[in-house]
Length: 605
Ligand code: ADP
Image 1 (cartoon, rainbow, N blue to C red):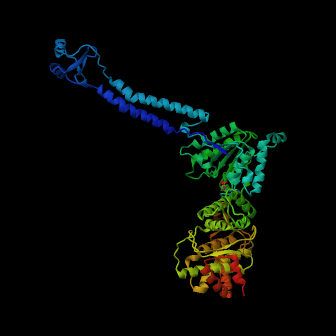
Image 2 (image 1 turned 30 degrees about the vertical axis):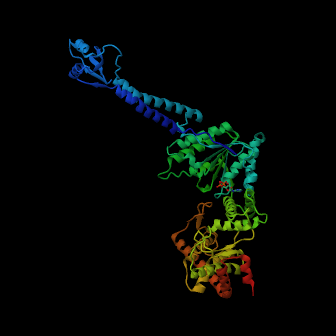
């Protein structure tokens, strides 16, 4: 879309000019004035100078009771009058001129006026002018000086090249939901006739990078209306009251441009719950209050639709989400398999792709990736193709770039000792073998012991065949067993443990804990929620919701669960020791093996 930003007048620029004028004035005018400076001398000096014939011009100022004169060098002097009847004679004798130019004595008052008062007056006048300009631009007395109270919302004017719904892949439910808005903006009459009113505000909620901003832009693009975009944090200023004024200004502009769409990104920056906690943020609360008032203030069906995005919906103030304000919530979730494939295809259009690329496989490998991550994967692959001087992106570029996104780049010169490499090979084979020998486990796609920049010394990639929405208790248990498989192999072969399992331990514990506290998979606790998820879209941190005794009991159960799976894994490996050795040796030599190679060795008699 054409983004039309209002040209920002740098106010420092004006101040700069004033400062420059002041400096120039002082540099140029002051020496001149200094020359005109009058030196005060006593009458004796005057007489002496007259006697020495050093006087040039003399003016006797009876009224001021002083004599002002210059010497032959042009310097100005003055002295007090004395009752001197011979004055005229003395002057005549000195050869000075009585006539001629009257010496302009610079009045100290004038000097003060010129050097101090005049610049200040100029300064004030310029400031007045700027203030007037700013007010005119912002349209009212509410606007603050220096543009501080002005919303600097970016306006995307309707344009035929704008983002469309077709650019946003997947997210069909969200698109369907929003297409109603588009229809309304095209055809408000239809809705008015029947008495239906559009929701004033629509909240797009979902994890980061799922295309919320894109969807908002697409709504504007589809409806061909102006699009105001602002981020929640842009409202919060250093000075209390500025944010509120920005909100007012934004709505004023929007109403003028109606029908239009106002998009507030990361609305949680201003819309957080007002919990009255000590040290609350006054500025934020005032901004929020203003937003609430504005949303109530404009009539329904004015054609201003407010879209807002957040990934922390639970932290929003209830007043903001009540009907009449942001009353519609559109979830924008992580894409499923089909969605991922579509997103990959949308972004692949922008780069040269080898026709043999299998998007479905890439989409399966990138399970759990957001739209932004998928876009990044395509770009990484394109960069890799350029690095290798190829003219098109291939399947292997894409697969490698997924690994880069998951585990970082390959470490080219990592120095693993032979023994370490052996341990890593057994560790990874352990994971893969336990995964493969259990039912309900995703097939192994790839095993590698090439160290990565993320610190991983190797990893085993498992890829599900299709979408996976539910996981059974057995599947979760098997997953834990697979995670413990690495350590189990090390113990079996080397009779010791290494630090390589820290990430496995973390993941296994998280899973086991969730099974017991949130999924009700422990007999003793039945269907009681012992932990609550705090922000589901941002990492999903949990907080305990039970007594201290219960916590101790949970810990016991988590330990027992993991122990049980660890033992299961150890048993599987022990029973397949030969295969473990064979596969680990193969992996050690090859460093990276595919799922097919792995399965063919495993299935060979
Ligand atoms: P959010 O606002 O949800 O954090 P954005 O809308 O800013 O995410 O998306 C970031 C980038 O990710 C977009 O510019 C786009 O390239 C890509 N992207 C995300 N979701 C999608 C999608 N559904 N279809 C196509 N591209 C997407």
